[in-house]
Length: 267
Image (tube, rainbow, N blue to C red):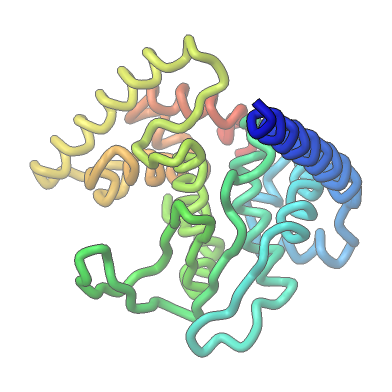
């Protein structure tokens, strides 16, 4: 009985410490979020990140707060021959990543702790030891890997439906529950049936078109599996909303509900 009492006491202390830590972190996030970007930083984003420039002023202000928290909490690590992840690079990456958080109900990316940045495409091995050239990756253990060249290309043409930052951070949201299966945590339990039905139908439609060699608004890579479909659909939702709603209206409506945003309103 004495040992049981000691164990219970330890558990109570752990819970109390954990609760205090969460409250402190929440308060600190609120303080950091209240710090808006400087004029030079805003100008940089308007020039280098077209999706930021299109946002209404109120959403820009909210995004800036999320960017501040992201840069404050997430470590940026240069890889390969990259000497440094500059503040400009951090801003350009964080502003696009946090676009996914803006009205989604998420205020962070779960287990994410670091963003690894290579200067360009890099070589990596999969779980089977097979090497391949990659532009980005999202890991469940708390890291996202990006090619800076691909990040720049993604913002250079904001209407081609290809954006490595949106793609990989969509995977992070999908992996929030530890799975990464194309089914992220939704706002309400009642949202799941319609989400599953719509995503399955749109995914199968894409696979059928790819098999026929037909052109589609969604990149063919989305036909790989449901997780890649969700990431590709997210890129297309933000960069080619008009084409997506025309070809996959149900999919567009699901993503609009999930992200709490309607990119058509920004055109």
